[in-house]
Length: 154
Image (cartoon, rainbow, N blue to C red; front, top):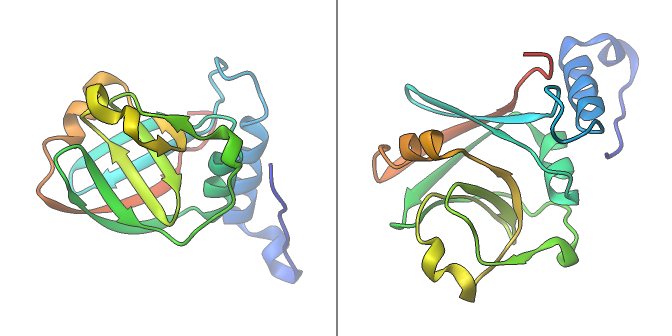
């Protein structure tokens, strides 16, 4: 799941406790109601995507909360994100509309274009359902995304 470190008063912080609870929830069965969910906010739009069990998803969890800015390319919102840890073998060829990918210095919400995506290798860490993906497509050409982790018991 990652390594968590804290010193002194930080050991008692609510933020650390929330991150530890979320990491523990991610160890449960993926169909469990306690699966960790990525919360993506942009203006009034708020969507939630269950995180998968990849190394990249675990790494992203450890870096939340984050704010990223991206532009809509027509198939995705692509946002610069400092390179994190991921396992190259977990990448896949192409994507499904609604996939959220993190790798190669990018955070991407792949909202469209799955039929032509087979020429790209991506690292999905989460997936938006159809209704939430439709909300992402309503955002303006440039959007700021606040990324956080939903409390696992909600």
